[in-house]
Image (cartoon, rainbow, N blue to C red; front, side):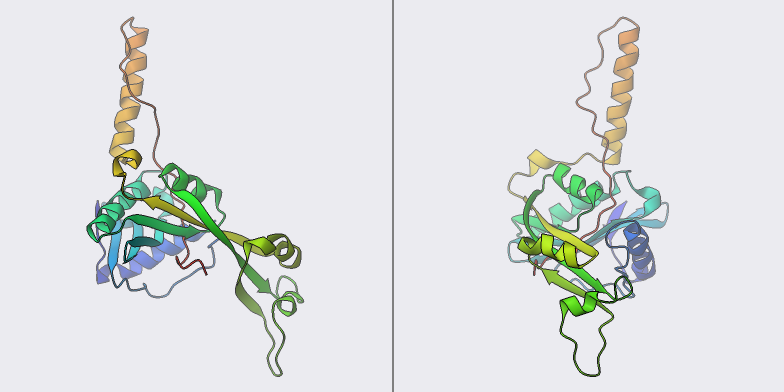
Length: 239
């Protein structure tokens, strides 16, 4: 069930988010309080009383930005992300948005999910970490040391044009990519829900069974099981 977030969900929201991010390029992006959404939507997915997915959407003018989307690891690849996205798009359109975007790092599962979900990739920049525990010289390559201060670990933004140079100087560099989907052609990108996928599987199997019995197989459109949802996004400023 997809529903609105409530204050009582905060603890479960934070746990779902951090567990979802493990194993992704956002593994160390940990929050201790849920960010507020001033205008947009705060959506959660619930299954048998447990919170299994979260999505925060911020709307400014005609642009809606997915600030966070995450699905609990025990419920990934079950269509939870698709159902939350469908609801987020409905809310975005109701608030006057004509496009929805998200920024995410270079995680193959996330990139593939956005592409399958009707998003086009537009714009890139770098997330660069300078970490003295990885290499004592990394912070000195990023900033000029000031008297009395010893840089230990830093997070920086960089230009995509400098990617090769950044990767030569720092061990941890991510490409942050902007994905955009227009909302003026909604029918073209309708995502199948978990129920839709199950019905497709049943029709596909039924068609095979009928064919074996010598009857014409049931026509069941292309089988596209929904949705890897190890998905994480960064703030949608692109700067």
